[in-house]
View 1 (tube, rainbow, N blue to C red):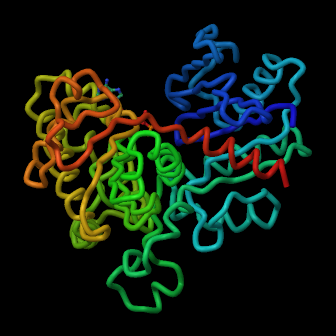
View 2 (view 1 turned 180 degrees about the horizontal axis):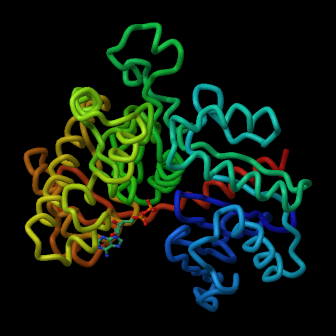
Length: 394
Ligand code: ADP
């Protein structure tokens, strides 16, 4: 199969893109890049396969008024120009929520779009942008086949008991259950675990995806057995702007005693909480690490404490622990956060090699550690590209 596959991963203020050769499954992306800061101060970055950075703004004068819908067609035109003779065969999208229905990469049709639209309230920060990207591609070239790859899909292997809330049964039956997210990232890490852990890859592994959104997944035999995000991507760890786990009574109090509307609470929990809310300084871990403000340190301490408690709480679902993997922006880059989380887990026989951790080696556990600790960069785009290749081969 000749030609290109384009992957698009749209967040609330960003579009990540990658172009892959459809016929070369193991080849790195030919172009990767990101438009960030949409709606505020948009920036454009792109690299070719040799790592060279393209000029700052090939889309010409990005402004704060540009929306995802304006930018995607311009991005597509630019990418097609860059790739010259390579025809675009398929576009694969990261779609956050597939609900109960979509557990495999799925070809986009009007019916699929209607079903995915209905899931927007469950992922208000992401799903509308994911779907806007699909519509923008369809408007640009209606004949290009598109598929959706779901963050929820990897967690289909959880036992039912891990998916239930302690709510009346009828609510679970109608779909108010724990789905779990970051599935494309976990699928990628699961795919490369054997290279790094050998037969231990089939054992009991907890992967910590620590980025702007944060979650953990407990795997056995490289399949999801439990995860920290639930019905929405709001549950679990402290995130950049999201609260993570919260006593539901707080929400009742905010609405009943402080007169907040549902929309106010949504904004508070999705956009004003997490590292940003606690520090009052930034949602960005690196900024907080550089700050000397006590509020910044407190936000980091809360992030770390919740991460360690949560990791330990996942262990019963897999009956022990052979390895921990750190991935995503914070997991891959912050040696202090990794060290702080692991230091609260020494009682598990988990010990870091401080030098290996500071260097960001792949294996950062000490030789005497009962639990292997790894740092592995994730690659959600590679998972989407492989799903496209599989569809093209049908
Ligand atoms: P997204 O979820 O948007 O893909 P990333 O996985 O890129 O986000 O993670 C972004 C987070 O990673 C930010 O909090 C950022 O500060 C953090 N990060 C990136 N590099 C570093 C670093 N060198 N030290 C500490 N934190 C970092």
